[in-house]
Length: 114
Image (cartoon, rainbow, N blue to C red; front, side, top):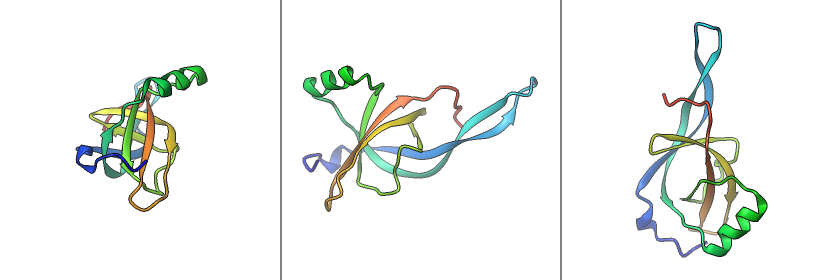
């Protein structure tokens, strides 16, 4: 994907993982988001055809973002964007020079913001 304008990348996104940061009185672990690195990103809108295809595949993608291609980004990371923690559901990578990656996100359950 080369037609995405860099000027649309106005948001900062953090990539990290969950770690046990405290324990409740009952002994339950509380997991929190701990960032590793951050990148600039922009929102990405699906076409109607792409949305229909995703619905047919039962993919739980709530939000799509675009970043500059980065080999460090994989589906093992959690993502924090605008104060919300997401899981990575898909990564559509392009390895050409100046290329972008489209990342599908799904809201993460049970992870607190640190």
